[in-house]
Length: 452
Image (cartoon, rainbow, N blue to C red; front, side, top):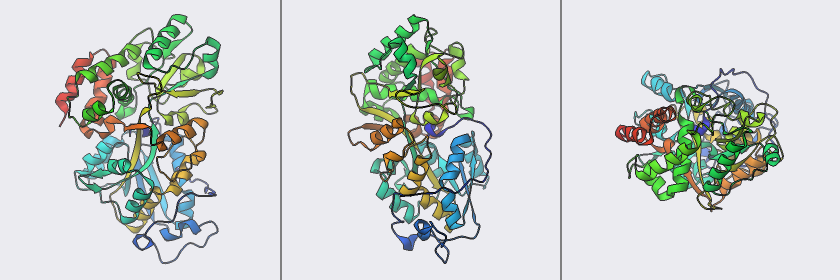
């Protein structure tokens, strides 16, 4: 999921201390007879929760994904106790070129044991090779217990359930500095029109640029721009048009999409409004998304559009709170109080059915793992067994509640649901071309012509 991409820096995988889990949420796997396992349950203190996974003598399970840097460290920490209790060594490899390299590895006959797919569209594309195995019984049982039907469907290809969800995020947050806004008398907008008015007000104040933006993300450069368009399509055209767009029931360059994208352009292609802390509009195409919001904390721009996971990407020591260094509001709709959000998530698919691999895959689909990882900070899960109180900040607590609120109009990140050649290909390229000067109709038409 685009929301899972992180700053493309080298990852050092080192040993991590065992995580002391207390008050874990989630039951043991629903069908112990279907579980993998060795001959004996673990006997170490604190390992009772892992008894049904079995014990393994130093077996390794390779896990490949897009998650890098501090979030990769937290990922390793999230299963440290599981490793100690089961004897499985989960060897995680993160890559900024996952989208391209997973296909290379599959075609070369060297797939990982497990892969964390950041887009359902890419999952479906790789599944088309026949290399991804159906989810084992234990994983399917966890998915049915802890995930909504919609989330299960995102991991289903051609009617077969392949991959359980992992983490989740809400897109479309607008990050800002509460103290800067209070000092300048700026108020959180309740509609898109108010956001436009606020942007113009900030620009005319000559205090800072209204927006700081970055589309850079290594091989995945361009995806942050698709998030802007998807958020505006959902809010300006509505969920029905959004659904028709991502399934190609209407053309990619339908007038409703052109209008939404032009409205985004009114903000981030305007040289008076961007790119605080970095330069002019042209810098957006290459500015790494991971640092693109940092000027908010430095008084160089007023707003940054990015998902809930961005909380974990601010410089170390940044306080995320209503009265902290940064806070965020969800991009409003055309009317005040419109509860519509886009979001994303990852999905764990398997290329091996070895017992140790199934054990890891089952654990990652559990509420116990979701609470473990979320309690470490920076991320969310739509797992229904997640206790929102485990989220690392008031903003993420609120985001978790939004994910679990049945009244929220939630739509999965559009490009993540599109065919991989579009959602993780031509759409990304189009956003780079567009922010570099190409007009809306041209780039959307190019994506339309690329739809398989």
